[in-house]
Length: 479
Image 1 (cartoon, helix red, strand yellow):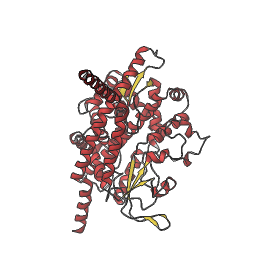
Image 2 (cartoon, helix red, strand yellow):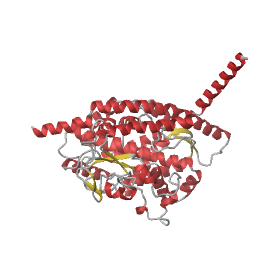
Image 3 (cartoon, rainbow, N blue to C red):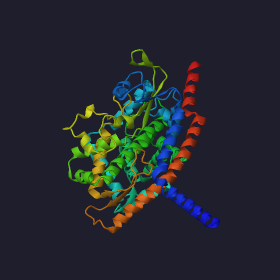
Image 4 (cartoon, rainbow, N blue to C red):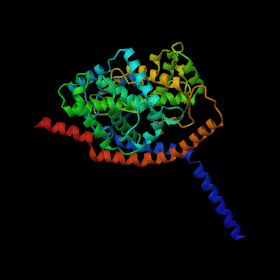
């Protein structure tokens, strides 16, 4: 009797353990995300203020974000050490991280000049770069991490005929070539493209805490840019050393631009893959509907999570209540983009139909606020994205059962098939395999993000890149 009871208890325990293991993809990643959020909020310190939050509501979000005193970017924010760590080398030359002043003005002016291209040129440049990627006119060489090579090698060597790809990896070479030609006004050589992709992929992988940073990949691009400065087709910011000019180009155009455009395009394509009815209408429709799809994608999956600003003066928020100078305002884009929308988690491009509502009145600022460091590519980026998405839709039908989240750590797994191809049992099995694989990858990836993210928070505080930079400036100014 005792033996039978013991056997029964063991069976129950094994069954319970099996249920827990099988259910891991459903509950563990979400719990880890919450835990990672708790870890990262600890770095902000007591001076951080969430916006929207208890002190500043959604109705005051734009007002506070646009306030002249909400203009500090890096100096005095503990959180800046972490961002400088992720974006090294050269965040001190990055337009987004420079403090207001003559250097910021010079860098911002140079960026606007480089991005100033006629609409027809932007469209043609995008079309050429994306078609080269899709038609397989170049390969992915050394210097790029193995995951990227696996994700796009089939496509870039023989042309992407069909199969499962990672959308971010697929699009990154195209945007690398695009950014190179903006800067140098000449076609991008394969060696330079591989350096740019290796650099951008390492930056975004570290930002998502899916891997540690590899400074050798980034330094190789810096060295290449220093040597290539005489070939830049634009006037660069004056008063900078050659290395500073190279770091400016690397940060603005080969980190931020390549990463953000690859992410944005992957998000739009993933949204279309997950919503076949929207995809069919976008493929057959005009650019106005595709613009609505892009706008809704950037609402639901904003490229910025938290934008932090350091107050340079007091900001009055209510009678007798003010945000003191030196506070760190953490502007929460996802929270703002969901406020005021019915069923905010539902993907609905119709929200941006001009006949339904005035877009300017919606809680939607995908490129930031005009009065406070807006994205300098706010005109160019949507135009280029539209052309890129149109080129992909012209060549493929998209399907995906993988998770689509704002941070997109899975890089957007997607099945590409030729238009009109028969959709049979093989496709269904591929999509089922994609769902299962993505779920279990998410379990492992969540644990990796927790461990590596925690380590990088510690390492960033140990190095104190931002704090030491400004304390060094202070010492030089006092002597």
